[in-house]
Length: 340
Image (cartoon, rainbow, N blue to C red; front, side, top):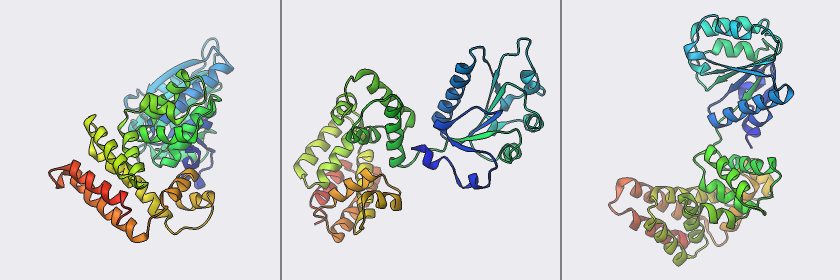
């Protein structure tokens, strides 16, 4: 999952190891960077658990870099009476004080023995001098990169890894349904995976996800889109009306159509195996295979017309027309007719 995006362009110029969030390991200094807060918190928690397993006497202390008191780091890193190992967690490094920058750079010259210093930097230019020093190798550190997970393929990989970490079996359909239902929040996606593993005894299938999370708007939205793209006009309309009557918003429904039609447009006329095309187009193999099935019966002009209607509908549900539901029904008619 995130391992593919864990080493951004700057990693090529870095003198220290660049690790994905789920490969975090202790070091004298651990820089946890990136905008994905949930993954950063998970990585820091895993580091704590690893150190605690090595030595239960581990002392954990916290520093807020944006409210740093001069001398605080040196005091906390000083050897204790019983010489127990120490984990110093520093938050808000992206908002740190000048004193924190100066004292931490000085600390890198001689990190304390049996101490792990974890620096959480959420992005931005503040503290760049410190980050550059760490990435140049000062302090013998590592960087754990927690970039935001944006692509559906990466979210799918993330969910699959959640089940794999617990040795649980999950179908590809269940993973697709979970990603569709929780595409906006990686923390919710993780929580949903954990809930299913806790409650479901056997293999987790699409039906399991439907039973637990069938009310999520994105799941219903993709059901509408799937039916329309397959040419099942009546089923698509019934599903749409059920979704709307349940209080669901038209905007995510249009977004579901957009997601599927964009993928179909990427694949139209392409030749090659699913793995090859997935790598070239930045998709997951299952997305390629699904889009190839969806394209059956479509022409280039029909797909273009459907995408044009989609754009009009997107504007309509965002205020350009007075009746967004009518606009949705009109779009379903065009899509179900494959643009004809």
